[in-house]
Length: 521
Image (cartoon, rainbow, N blue to C red):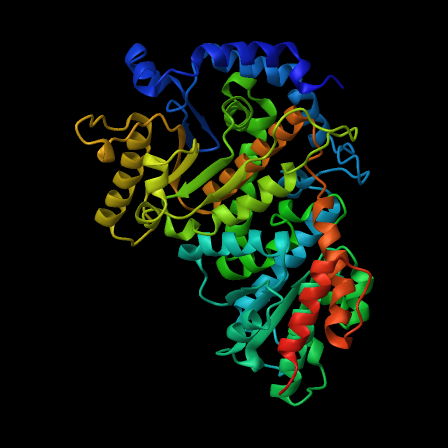
C-alpha cells in the first residue's frame, strides 16, 4: 500500500492548502454568493450545509481524488459484501447487516425474539424473580454496550412508551450502581447484562452486586435469575453464570461493540420506546447506508464529512472537533461519538503494521446547546485553537413541545455557526474582536425521531470508516484498551493482599500509599 503522503492527491492537496490557507470565509462567501445553497447535501432525510468550511470547488475536487486514490469505494463495497476487512482480528465488520432490508437469518430471528420480549414487557407479562411484572430495566454494560443504548434511549425519550423505565450503569465505581438502585423496587426490576465476551470485569462486577442486592432484598427467591437477561457472543458463559437459555440474546464476532446498538444491545431502546421505534431507527440507518453505498463521492454525505475532517486534521493541524447538538435529548451524543471516532481511528500504525506518516483521529468533545454557549464557546470564538464544529439542529420540535422555545433554540444554533464563521471586526476594542473563520457543518434533522436518529448515527459511522480507509488504519480493532485492563487484573490483588507485583516504582509507591489510606485506624 502506497504511503498516504506519497500519493499524487496528497501532494496536490498540500500545494493547494499553501495557496488557500490565508483565505477567510468572508472572502469565500463574497466571491460566491450562492455558496450556501451549492455546498449542501441531503441524504436519508438529513440536510447538511458544509458551506462554512475553508474550501473551494478545487479543494473538494482534490479531496474526492484522494478518496478515489485511496480506494474508498472499493473498501466500502468490501465492507457491505461482508469481507474480513478487520484484518488484525480476521473478522468481517458487518454492522450494516443488522439493519439490512433482508438481514441474515440469525439477525431476523433475534429481532423476532426482541419483539416478543418487548411485547410481553409492555403487556405486563415479563416477570422477574418475585413473580411481579417488570417495570424497570437496568442495563449493565460498558463502552459500546452502554454508550450507544444510553444515548439512543435518551434521544428518543419523547417516544417513550411509558411502560418500562430504563436505566444504565457502566462504572465499576459502586456509587454508580448504588445510586441507581436506591429508589428501585427489587420486585419489579430486571437487569440486562450486556457483554460481548461475558468476561468484562466492570460489567460482571456490577452484575454480581446486582444479584447480591436482589438476594438481600427479596430473601433468596427460588428463581433469582428470572430477573436477569444477557446479551452476549458467549452464551455458554452466560449460562454458566446462571442466565436462563430463553433470556440470552446473541451477538456475533462480526459486530464491534461501538457498532452494536443496532443488535440486541439495543434491547433497552426497544423496551423504552417500543419495537416499532427501534425498527424505525434501523430504517433510518438503512436509508443512510443506501446513500453511502450508491451516491457519487462528490455528493456522498459521509464521504464529504470524512474528507473535510482529514482536510483540517492533516493540513491545518486541527487537534479537536466539537459536536454541538442543539437538542437536549442528544446530550449524550458527543460521548457516544468519542468512542466511535477515537476508538476506531485513534491508531498510530497502518493495516500493515507500519508507522503512519500522518495524524489521525482528533479529540472529539462537545455538549448540548445552548448550555455550551455559556461554557466553552468563548474558546471557539476568541481562543487560539482551530476547532471545526458540527451543529446538529432538529428543524421541528417534539410533539407537544413549546414551538416558540424551539425557535429560540434553532436561532441560537444558526447564530453560533454564523458568528464562528464570520466573526466581528472591532479594531477599536481588541478584547471584543472575534476573528471568525472557524469552520462548521450544520446538520439539520426534520425532527429528532427514530428514523432521523438512525440516519444520523449511520452517517457518523460511515464518516469514520471513510477516514480510516484514507489514513490506512483498521477502524474495527481496539488493541489500545487491552493493556490497561490486563494491568488492572494484576494490581487488584495487590491492593487487597499487600503483595507488590513486578511493577514500576511510581505504581509501587502509589499502591503503598493507597493501602495505607485504606487501613482501619
